[in-house]
Image 1 (cartoon, rainbow, N blue to C red):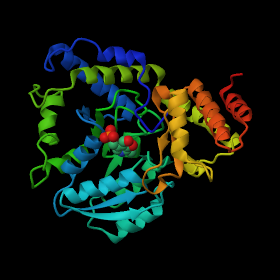
Image 2 (tube, protein in one colour):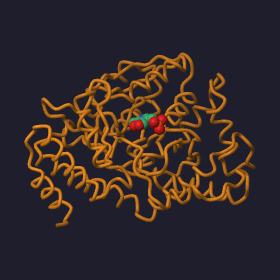
Image 3 (cartoon, helix red, strand yellow):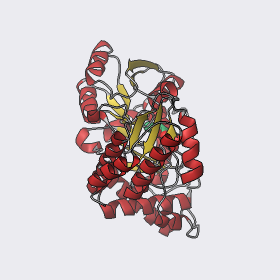
Length: 381
Ligand SMILES: Cc1ncc(COP(=O)(O)O)c(C=O)c1O
């Protein structure tokens, strides 16, 4: 129950163990076509260029920046946690200028601040932001940010690593342009793949580049030759065949559940966890309206060594919680309820273990009340 990787379902692990076939084998190519269709369903898009990059979420981030940013460009980057700072780094490494919208850690990006920054920088052509900040548990209003970007003639780069499959994300309806994610969070696949999707507007910008993309592996013009359905597939790199079987299976499972039901499951389980945490006297640091259901950042009570608690949970209950990052290091636990980890038995295990171990460390809590509060939401007894 950390910030990812989430638990991987046995069906997905079984898919990983299937025999490896050639990555240009017709059966594999047919599976890739299905995979793209399934990914479009998860992203809620008709974008033709929707595919998994053969590398982790960070490569999803890089593929967006190296292709859409050219030297000399100005990019407005929203920073309200760790992953926004990486976006700034990507912009600068692409030889462009990053104009930062400095937000508060633990809060959503402020749309008005973005509006003012874009108005002050009419030269900017891109707005980059993190939809679901895994470092804090804050969810930004991607729809509002995309709408502001469009009014200022900017494309959007949106980090959906933690949101995809766990909370509402509507790539087409919200008009997002370049969106990347990771396989290991709410899709509950093994780590190491980065689903991405690009709008036609984004691809037009890539086609209009006057400079070569500064990465051979991540150059979309070359990758499209392998993933695109229109052309004959050509060798680009050896696809991670078994990992792609696993992603395919996890997306089939998501389609079987239904994406809206998956969002509702995450929201429901978050409410149960929240009720239990509150009964333990613990507080979530993100204001209610800005909370992610799949990542719960909990303030560590005064006098408690947060690392000691995590170590006890791991050793005694085989339960992983995440530590705080950056300015939240030592101050919060990050409790993930992602994908296959988002289950009632995990919530009850976590509340019971936290209550017991906090009590053992001298912090008085009522574990029974916490379990009862969570069960009341879950509808179990
Ligand atoms: C919001 C966000 N962006 C990017 C990444 C990077 O993904 P990966 O660790 O798979 O490279 C993560 C990973 O936790 C993340 O949470």
